[in-house]
Amino acid sequence: MEDFKANPHFKTREEMEREAPKSNNVVIPELKIGEVSVCTTPDLGNQMPLVLEKWYVKVGDKVKPGDVLCEIGNEGVTMDCESFFNGKVIWTCEHKKDLIPGDELWKLEGI
Image (cartoon, rainbow, N blue to C red; front, top):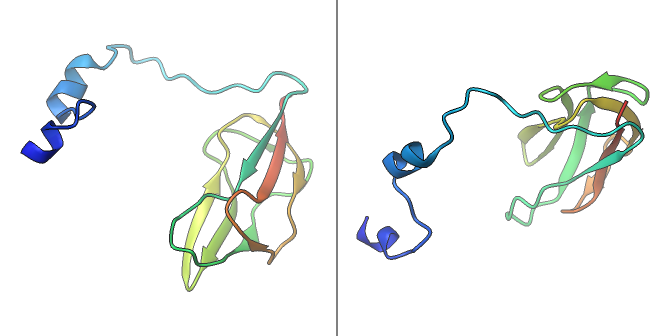
């Protein structure tokens, strides 16, 4: 624990809870009408290629924060990818595509 405390940015759980805003309001990120958001493949740091395994949406579908849009994976490990915004799916990458970090998975447009 002392090693962590040597880092000036380290905070204990108690310190974080004490400093946290006391509001119960949840802020939902918002796309303005016509604004486009691009979701890219994450860098998982394991240097193994990812594959887009399954789509749960199609172009034209409306989505909201938390909706699972697709599943990516490698070597038997899969991960669901969720939307951060309310919007309409305007583009998706091809199914079973080999992915590298930074590849575009989908585009959403604010509605």
